[in-house]
Image (cartoon, rainbow over all chains, first blue to last red; front, side):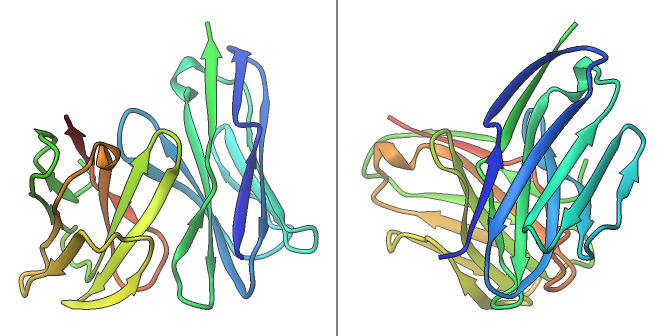
Length: 111
Length: 112
């Protein structure tokens, strides 16, 4: 059965810290991996990764995929209170194009 | 505003009742997806429509049904509601099978 596992499930850090969120997957026919940020309501898209070893970057956030070891990491540097959210990882497969979602990492940034 | 509109934002109803949740996708998007998010289960895919046709089904209960209309808006019907159906119901849309979904702000359903 296809599955996506995120770790840690929750994380509390102080403003200015750097955090690394993990997403590992076991799926057949991997197509892409996506990261979303969910604050109060709707998840918002962050990154989509399809190729191994190529870093996607947006400001203080970056993500990289390792297709050999079947995982991705999301890094956030110089964290701010506004980064507090649930970070969701999802994997799309070639089988039916649906997204398989991880349970999310709840990140809390303390001032 | 993401461009995906969901109504109502909140809904409180009694067990055994039936409700309809509505979603208008982002302009130009042909695919609509429905998700359920509860505290203990994360995001669960329910069903996808593409240009009016059902494309894929996930963990959707038989008490639930959906459809996508010619103007591409979609409705999710939940019947014989149980306490365990209390959750956030999200609609998302995309142009095609491209996975970069845009989510609506959700409907919070509380069954009492």
